[in-house]
Length: 575
Image 1 (cartoon, rainbow, N blue to C red):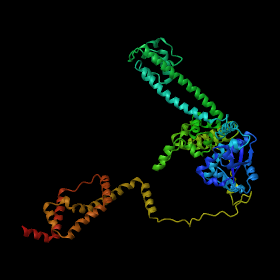
Image 2 (tube, one colour):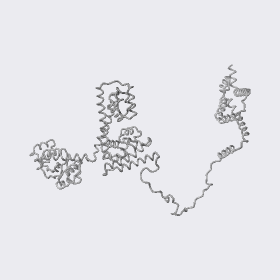
Image 3 (spheres, rainbow, N blue to C red):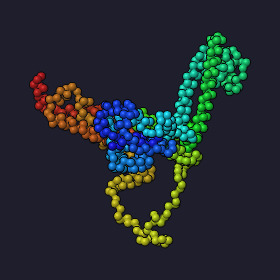
């Protein structure tokens, strides 16, 4: 059995002299307490030395990623044919078994054996000292770390991540310090907070003015505008603030110096961030700006990680909480995240912000991939994509009629749509069909005849209108006479108490007779409307006299008594 050991100097292949020791996992370490005891367990068979640092780095990287390098493949082919190989990585062992057909072993006994071999490596391999191994290990570890971090001095996106984080922290601190200055100095001059709204101008004004009494004699033209300066000097004599001591004023002055220095450092940091963004991601900077681009890179972790994200992820990057909350509650998902602060999205109206954010995210994803993986350092792609997004915005707003992106297509070919023509001949292949009027389907002519009559009545001369009015009044009188009886037969309005008692003992046929006019009354609403119109058109008509109403009541009572003789007899008997 052979044992493969990787070292900073090369690959070492040892022969295991006693294979039974692998079963004694707990006692293997005792066999490597001394170099002499270690030589009785293993013996160096072959050693493959690395020629330079690049080869050592490639071999170490392949082992870390569980891959088979070319040098190790040649070494194992030459030395391990027909042998069993003890190896530290099980994944690498499977690859060796598949490609080289060498059986590999990996268990706890092998791991303890390799640990003992490494402890006595300088004595087991001739020509290696502990100092040489330490120096080679240090150099290889530095190279390996630089490779895993993908260190490139030209494109260091880590500086952008740190700069944008510090910029956000400075904004928070500046806001806190400025509010503290306003609150502190407000006890002496409270009116100044409303006059000077900018925090930095406020701190500079306090530093220059010190106490408010000195304001009329000072010149604030370098700090404030003329109108603001006039308001400040007018507010000094009418101020409601209290007096403060010189010691308190000195403390406030030092605090103002801190605010001003932080503001100056913030501007320097912003300039540095802008220069780094133009060097590392110029196309992304052109599309969304320095701050938004830096926040996208910081949120993704690096420019490479951001380039791997699709456009849909770039669109909602920064709104993860809202997205998962919407998915959990089954509501509408967010349309934008950090990209909402881009200038192109801010220019769009509220109803178009979602569409512009989607278009901008698609173009941003393309620009990020070019910045991260492309070799060029120009911003041409970003400029073109920005022009396309602006054209799309104008199209949505109705400012442009052309297409948003892409070149115009060729003109439509008329031949493709005119299939019935032969080449350049103007005639058709088949004769034109005539329109058949007999095939038309017509509806019943009842409605049409009524419409024709109405049209004829409207077109009739004005001399024929008086006889038409008489006919309307006659029909209205007939309708009134027909509807008068149902109105008088209603028992609630026209009957006395005696009639109600007699009606209670009446038979069912009488009830049907009384209810029938009520139903007729419901169905004759249209007749009442026509009656009302006729009365309005004929103002000469007078209401019926009271005598006629009394006669009708008597007639109704007689009809009821004749219809219910049995109930009347019963009533007389009871009396």
